Image (cartoon, rainbow, N blue to C red):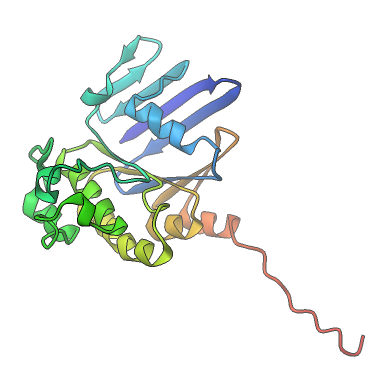
Length: 231
């Protein structure tokens, strides 16, 4: 279980969140500039709010009242950004092995789950965008994270590559017990992946929705065809 309670400002922009996330995919949905990525940065320790409490299981990562603030490298988080960050001088195999720890899925399980077997001897420069993102996901999982943070991981891909990667994210959700926090402004991704959705606007989490409630709340308005004949 991940608990996030925080309040702060970046310049004059307010940030406020109250989130409880369990196993499965918890999504944070909102427009660009709404503060989604800032919340992930707070969870990962890259931004410290003025007031906050963040806990994963029994481990407190941040408690401003008790002056607890674990550094990023001690938070046991797997983070995948919009642009996959791979070591260009290392093969896919060595990128995956970097920082690898014992994990429930294991090396072979991750290779199979993300279909990386044919990629392990390649260099990052020889990967497509979708392939590189799958490698970044695999490396994050193999680091044995308590929580996986995915920050707009498909935004840099075209529609065809997004469609190719989404099934792997579904397998990741279904075949591991790692809680996943997924940030996106794409409604279709949220509907396909999320078990619980928090919406954000103007820096503040304002709704907690089930997928059904989210679908209804974000349903595009229908355009009724008007036939003026005879009027």
